[in-house]
Image (tube, rainbow, N blue to C red):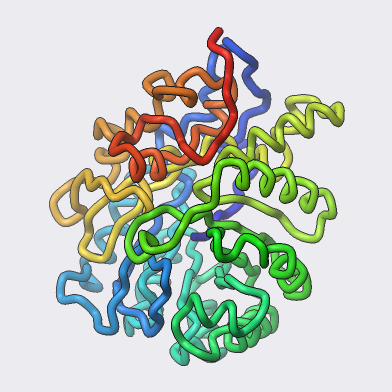
Length: 379
């Protein structure tokens, strides 16, 4: 998934200050009005067979997909959030499998909705198709790199040659002036290779490196998550890398990285205002259901792609009302309802934990994120 940048003045977005223990939560950490990002799984169809696929993608398109007209209607409903509008990420499966993708991207652009692309790297991804999508309005692209060598990356992707194609796609994106986010899966099988992946992505001229910590959904249920102790060590390592300034570093479904970064920056003498202006600070509060929503190929709506709790369907429900009023969304945004260690953590508003992992492990979206080892003291 792609994360886009918003300026600090974004309403409901980036706080000017940070709460301390027992402080009143700044409303800037709660995205009640609108999400920053709407992920649209345009299709399940994909030419890859990734071992960790959240969507359990299939070779052929489903007849249940939203049609072109229904896609336009979805974009019209997004307008109901008002300004500033959410940013739409066209994802899948492989969105390139939709022949009407340019038409849908252009429709978003015509409505003033920013658009990003999360394609699969297959022969369907060509420089010509990428140029066509940029002309239609695509602003950024994400590419996945899950290993530092063809053997490691292709082994996870299930198709030989994807490592080389990913490097070639990055060159095309540069030629076309498209900023790149590289996504890397974090599991027990990729953990030891991450330093070498870092060196590889450092040669790619990227805007952001996003590390996706495995959630056991879809095909990913056959892989193994790293331990809480390993995740804490990894978070400290990532913060150290961020100081090198080669590109932005973020984590997905491992929001406790924010706690590690906050404590390190405070130890360095940074003020709350300075911390809030960093790339980490600009993401404070954003998590499953708070600043994020997900629409799958058949129109079902979820708090995120990794949190399989459906709240409705765009074919019959108002997207804005689902986000603003559905009890699942409102509870995810209300950290006073959180349980266990997350419920008493002084960093809960800025972090919030992975609600998807809490659900995967306990069946309760409000429970403690088991990947975070921090033990707070109740006030």
